[in-house]
Amino acid sequence: MASFREAVRAGGPGKDGIPSIDRPRFQSAGEATLKDGDKVIGVYNRGQARAYPQRILVWHEIVNDELGGEALSITYCPLTGTALGFKRGETELGVSGKLVNSNLIMYDRATDSEWPQILGVAIDGPLAGQGLEELRVFWTTWGAWKARHPETEVLTDQTGFVRNYRRDPYGSYNPTSGYYAPDSRRLFPVMQRDDRFPPKTEVFGVRGPEGALAITREALREEGVVDVTLGERRYTVIHDPGLDTGWAFHNPEGLEIRPTELDFTAEGVTGPGIDSLEAVNGFEAMWFAWAAFYPDTYLYEGQEAP
Image 1 (tube, one colour):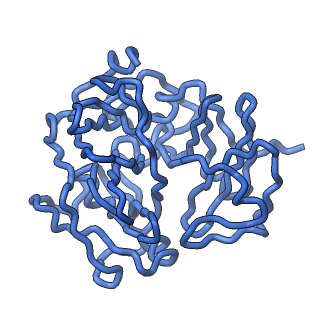
Image 2: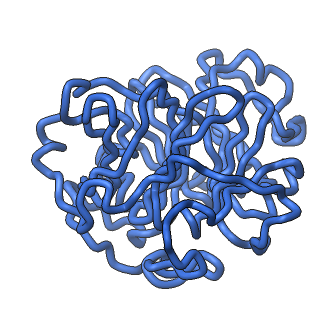
């Protein structure tokens, strides 16, 4: 963790200068004023669905919430295009004002330990070396999330802070422009560079004990099911065409999954043998950030033509 600590940079605003939302308010899907193409972070936990609009989280980066009776932190880093959920227990997560590899460094208010969001492991403080328990969240569009979860609640802009939630300080996702454009430049230094793709290209990333895997969005969409072996661990990643994301599983026996036999419901993906597989968290990330944290990542760009 020492190398990560040495690479920490000030992000501009100081500690809590970007304020987390600690008393979130919600409205029904019918009351929301979002457009179908607007980006949201979707969460489904213990039978309850919520959507957190990107246009709100870009100003706050963390929402400390409770869903299905469980204390959660929903986190978003606009600089790396990453959305992750964590089970926060008795504490809350806040924005430290620091970055590593352009990625948000969170801190927990119980111990003041510091956690890069993508890494999910503390790099400083009393809990250094300990990992946070992750909860799958979905980086998708409002139209797609509403179709999958019509009963979803939506975070409102009644956050307790005065911000212009109609304006994104970095650019736009609908349509993609400004900082979010694939070939635009990053703002902060990174520990490792990999120029195989434009820096802001989105990949779907999975990490495990044998290393990290990045799949191009195009390969995942085109193939539907991607099988990859990292070391001695086999992974299967399934494309969800409704949410345009992936579901990752540890598949030690090499169970064959056919896209035509799959169904996607509010509960997740179902199909022959799926219940016997161990789910692994995966998430979308900008390529430059994924490669900076995981420079030895395995990159899957699709099957080679015979």
